[in-house]
Image 1: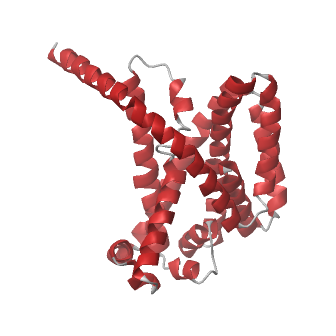
Image 2: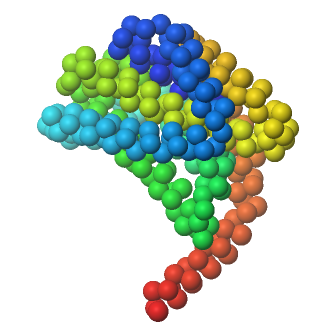
Image 3: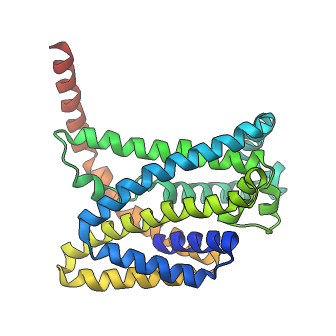
Length: 293
């Protein structure tokens, strides 16, 4: 379901930027993804390792330019963040209990979708890394959560706040990726909308590829090689279909299935907590010995 969210975002971004029908974008993305899926792990790794760093760098630079241009509004942006966090009824005018409940519900759901911490998906990728110490790879995994949540998402939030486009989201005029595109357009003109469409293509497409790989590992384990082609076909179909659905529906489906993934994974994490603790203690002792020598 996460792949449907990504294809939906790509379709919406390209419709805003180039007026291309979302279905046409979805079919093209699905076809490109299918080509990569057939190439296996090597092709997947080759594509993602080139796309992701370039995508992230260009997006960070673009967001920083917008924030610098609107630097006088930065204090007000942080004021809105803290007001929304500690007094959400002042922003929305809703009933306190319901407003806080919704803030927690959507905050947790979007945070989970963003960095997948505790969901049990990214360990498939980290498990195939060739490292001497598992804790080294664990630290890399935690860095991914930090970069995604505290850098990329914070920059996006600040862009939306300092450019003053957030009220258009409250009114329902803009939703999803269109809100970020409006923020970039306020500084870069229509080029900002195109810029976000291209960034979204790279980001979402690499995510589709990564999630496909996570699923493929499970399919191979459960059904063998025969199930992989059927799985790849189903992913391509959902990618194409996801580009045409309503944003709210796609997010609701994604939140539901993400929650179903989290429950068994959290139980596994609790049962493995002792093993993790022992490994990290051993890792710390080895580092102390190396530093002493």
